[in-house]
Image: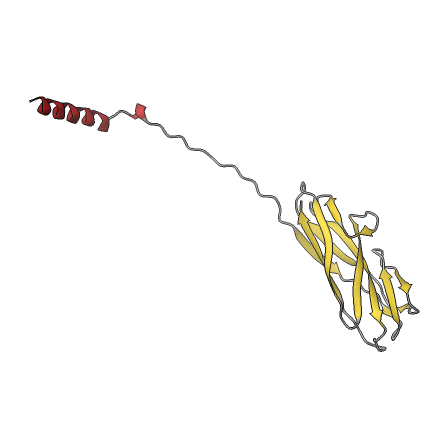
Length: 171
């Protein structure tokens, strides 16, 4: 008989728990707020143009971020034509600073690029290595100059198109 009483008591208790009032549980919705910064974008508006230089002369030429061409070594010289530094517009975050660097110098046609120089947002020309450049917001201009070494194998009328890479990342 005791067993029957115990089973009956347990059945009553289980029924009571199954029909427990809402006071034994509660829920609350939580909102997760997240903001996304503006993606970084680069728009090249001009490539470097050294104009025409002496053919068949092993020489190194430099173009400044202002587009001025000079001979660094050798007997070659700038002869004629329009010259210009590269120009890249950088746009993105109004709050994150930038790391700007260059690399991947690739020779072509016997001409090897090196020693890239940059001027960011109207600043002075310097080695193209920025550890914390100002945030670009709606857009800031990066002017790029460089040296190129011609090996002297270039014939009159030839064109060489060596390259290098400018990399910009958020800090």
